Length: 67
Image 1 (cartoon, rainbow, N blue to C red):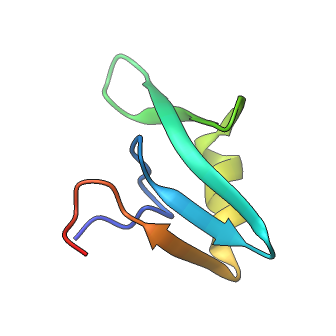
Image 2: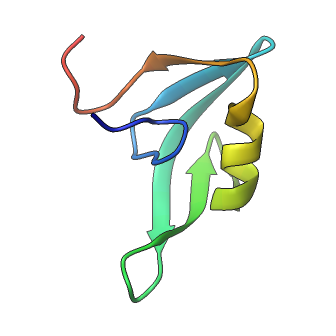
């Protein structure tokens, strides 16, 4: 099962300390590895995304998965 904290896709919603991020797009390199995450009009590297979600983040909605 995919973990939106590690491998986000458009439609994922993650909450941390009252701040919600909704993934709107991702950018991949030529090898198919995710390099950037776009959310709510902003973007960050996949490393920054994973660091942000590492502690105290809650997945509110995982796109493409049954609830």
